[in-house]
Length: 260
Image (tube, rainbow, N blue to C red; front, side, top):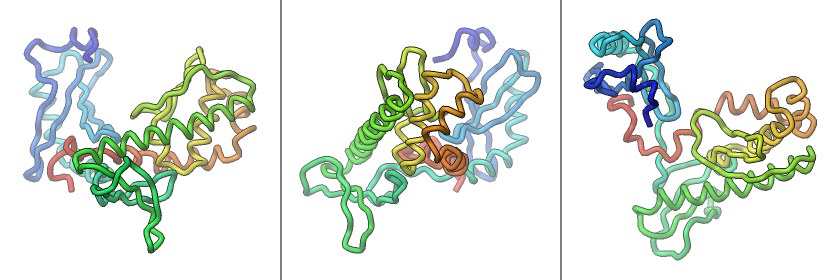
C-alpha cells in the first residue's frame, strides 16, 4: 500500500514503473520519490529481484528513465549475479534443514508431502496430487515444518532465559529473519527451515533474547552466546547463504527477461 507521504510527492499521472532496454532485454524499474533524496539512486532487492530507483522530490520521470537507462549494464550485471529462481516443481532441488532434497511428483499416491530416501540414497521430497497443486503443497509443508521447529527452539530458549512467549508465527519476511515484540510475540521467516538446524536455533535464541534486551547491546549478545555456542557460525552462514534462501518458491515471473 502506497503511503500518504509517497502520494504527496507523486505526480497525479506519474507511473510507478518504467522500463529500460539493455542488450535486447527489457527491465522493469520501480520508481519512488523520497523527500530526503538529493540525487537519483538505484538498488536491487535481492529477495524479489526488483529494481528500485529512488528520485528526489523535484526530479522528473524523464530524468529518472535517462538515469536508469544509463546504468542498464549495471542493472543487467547485478541481476545476473543473483541466484536463479527455484520454483516448487517436480525436479527442483531444495535444502530442507540444510539437506538437499529433490521434489518428486507422485500423482498416483495418496497424501500430501513427505520425505523419503531413494535407492541411491538421495533425499526426496514427495508430493501427491495433481501437478498444479505442487507449489502450494510444498509451500504449506515447509511453513508447517518451520513453525514446528521454531516452536521447539523458541520455547527451549525461553525456558533457559526464564521468559514467557505469548505467540509464535511464521511469515515470508524479506527484510529480516525474525522479529520480537515487547508483548512476547515472535515472528520468523519460514525460510529458516531451509537452513541447517544450528542456524534456525540461533535465530530462535536471538529473538527470545530480545524479550530481555530489546537492543543489540553487549548484554544482549552475552545472553545469546550464553546459550548458543554456534551464534558466530550461524551469523556467518546467513551472511554467505542467506540471500540464496529467498529464491526458493519463486516462479521467476518477476525476474527481468534476458538476465540468464
